[in-house]
Length: 305
Image (cartoon, rainbow, N blue to C red; front, side, top):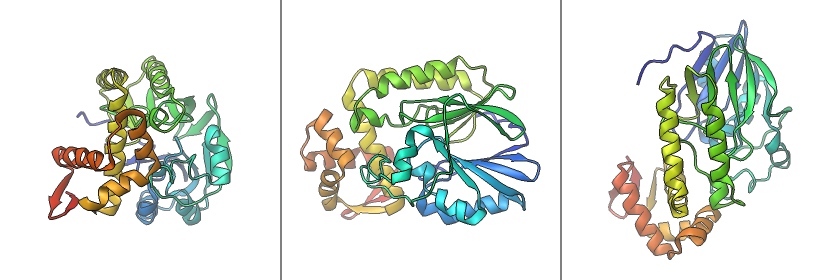
């Protein structure tokens, strides 16, 4: 992958998969942050930010969307730095009420710390960050209320989970919501593909300049999912259990069927698309995780490698 020549006013703290990337945009002695990572990494996030800020003041934190790996550090970051928090307008009611089902926390057996949003961001808003004007653009699909941030003069995009180098995030609306995720994801990708872009900072993975290749991969992935809804369900279960294991580190194989049956996301995805018994679903999942190389079997346990 080609090294990305980002403007010097932008710094990306690449975090992996349990926590989304943290994007810092500097304006003289102040900075704004995009996304704060997962709650169990909050202490690490604060430490990384303190080092990166180097005495500059963090004045604002914005979220691309409401998922736990993007908002989990919000409360800790606000306590540490006294910054304001802005969230997409579509998720504002769920944040205000701390509706853990709407935020997919209880639904996906994930955690978060309650925080208060100081203001709401609507699609079409323009923001000054890092010496550039950014446009907040609607990016439904992975999250139906998601925003991305586009800087026309820098020809750059902060894409959240709407576009990665090799795909995009889970289409939750298809497996736990009212549907429409596939259509929304296609519309989002088509809109983003029309933007003049030289570089992209995704929610996960390194920044990239292979923009055309990324869109080709994303559209290919979308066509693959459109062909068979069961693929969306299997992807959601596999990815979310992997996410869960990244924090938990291991699970007893004997406990896996009961876990899958107890979590609403897995239960509903299975009911809608797969129709497997908890035992059969657990057997398929264990085989998939082992085949991926992300986990290994140690006695009666699956462990993250």
